[in-house]
Amino acid sequence: MGRWRYWTQHALTGDVLCPALPLGDPEFGRELNGPGQLSGTLAPRWVRANPDLIRPHTTLIYAEADGMLRWGGLVWSVDAEDREYRIEAAGWSSYLTKRHDTHGELGARGPYVNGDPCQVIRDIWAYAQEQPDGNLGVVVDPVTGPATVGTPAEPWHSYWYEAPNLGDLVDGLVGEDGAPQYTCHSEYQTNGTVRRRILLGYPRLGARRTDIIFRTGVNITAAPTVGFSGDDYANTIIGTGAGEGTATRFAVDSVRDGGLRMETVLALPTVTGTDVLGRRIAAERRARQVMGGIDTLVVRDHPNAPLGSWQIGDDVQVAVSNAWVDWSGWVRITAESYQPAGDGGESCATLTVARADTFHYGAPEAP
Image (cartoon, rainbow, N blue to C red; front, side):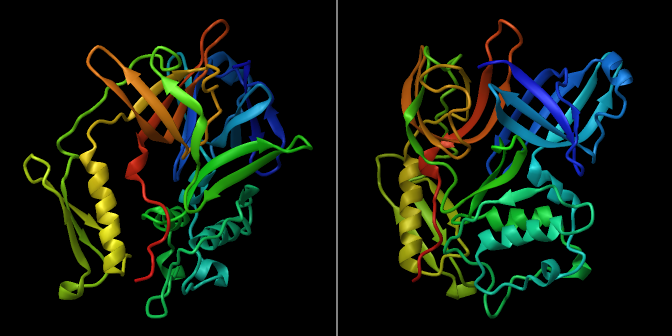
């Protein structure tokens, strides 16, 4: 990984405030369905000489390597201590946590009946950015999907008198199985300006990658812990779907595997078909019967998977060997945290992962 550069920009005017910020102890990364974070420190002497260059609610900050943007977001807090000045920043979607719908129905864009949640997310951003001093220049991918929000009996509303938080509205639209997924992204355009982007995916974000791999002794810096948890294991899944009381959709999928009966309840309130419910709980049971998994990986730059070669949401094959176990499987990257090294050091990234077979993609099928 080449030389890292950090720079800042005014949130409204776009003016470059500092083209080369001397950021110490940097750490940053993106996450699935969240803003991602950045942190670092500055020397007090530099801050005193440049008092107006880092200001919460005004400053955007970027991380760049090899001429490519790796991260971008808003400075949210600065903490001045005895010998260091710590910066905390978050990605573009964090801005919505400080915005509310004060006009109702996202400025008359709603209510929504059988609306596409991808379009509702775009409307939330459009509403936020049409208000005075609210335009971050964020664009949302033009993805569509068959999932819906709101019914004729219960439309999806955003009432002005409740002043709903726009960040909470987005969280509600991406928080269920079968919902669209997003992450925050920054990239240079051909004219040198920055495109601030919400990568939106349906039925999923990311893809199964066969061109990169993580292996201990190769590009995994230390063998991660492989957990075999009885708390996560189940050979019987009890599924509940749509409906109330005795009208609730209900199904059970169970196998006898020579061990104790271990049950888990899977609530899927949007599933209206018993056949669909049956398929979902069967898939859940198969996934929970497979023991073993990892939740974090620390990887270094390597031709097998150069730093930055993956995207949030990608499935990647992992092979772990240590004194106790050999484990391999597909994991999904749900968050990343880069730790750039100084001159002569080795940069690495900590990845938060989950077994890929624990995710379900796509809207519930019709009964």
